Image 1 (cartoon, rainbow, N blue to C red):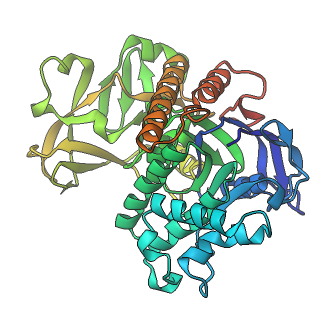
Image 2: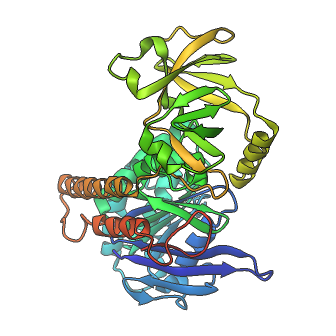
Image 3: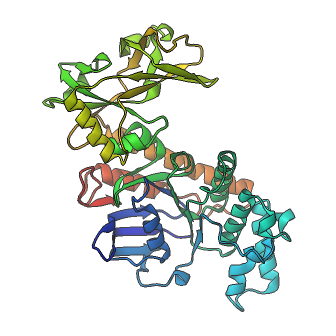
Length: 453
């Protein structure tokens, strides 16, 4: 296993465009890092730079402290799992898994090859399929064969390039679980590229959010969700997405298109002097006012709204409110849409309601919103004015400690040694803390140098 250090990595193509722009990340030994962002953000390019399939224009890439910029891919001892599986159709599952061992001629005896292949097959539940050809396997089984080939290499790290994007939704869920459990058992350093935020939020120890080649924030999934650094991270992480409402602040009252919202004084102070702010409200911050407990009611605001329609999902339902922003506010929303790589940002608020709520579309209803949890963003820079950096860092530390325990437990259950495997917490804590301390080179929403370690 190995640690991987990305030190101010830059990738420029012939036209001078920086596909990857000054990214620094410390990946601890045994840590599971996710690279996520919209199409064209540079996440796959960054992964290919790590494995050696793309040249590095500037910066240093270190594996276990050794600079590997000029090393060929085969000399980096990294195993890559591709989106299209890259299996040999004429070989059996056994021979596909054994292929990298056969390639290292004379290094492994036939007995060693057999043990490594059968052990990997057992780990991935492929034992009954070893003599089959890839054409006779399901998509999920093919992906497991590709991972088996990575396992037998006994590589220092696994690199995954959108490995589940070709699978249907149900199979993706199953494979997410299998990859997560495998990574815990093996305790192997892993870097995983995806555009699917569900994969990012469920798999990663930490998630690095990229936009146009720049690192926006790297933290545990929960920190990204609860303490996003800027508008882009807040809008990209979460499903349904965070709602954004242009607003003016008068004392402790936010004047918005859906009504006036009273907010706590400490939140109002963070936006003092701002003419216009963007209010970030997640759908689950809303409730049917009739169902709000009396103890919670003082911590929020109640307003009247007419929903266009509702969607009942069994365990919950979504409601939709449209609003007509002022012309200058509409331009602000259009600017935000461009920032988030969207064609437009509809003037719409999505609310999550309890399944028992009787609110229906077309009728005016009373809604309650928990104003303790909403975020205020600077309309010009996109910075989250209400972000509590210390609380966010604590969430990442907690997640790192929990994952270290999970890895140790999984390996004990698997009968493997714990030595050197229950790690990743030190790197995660250090990275989150140094970013939030605003160290030179730290990640910022407005650009400049980006560092997570």
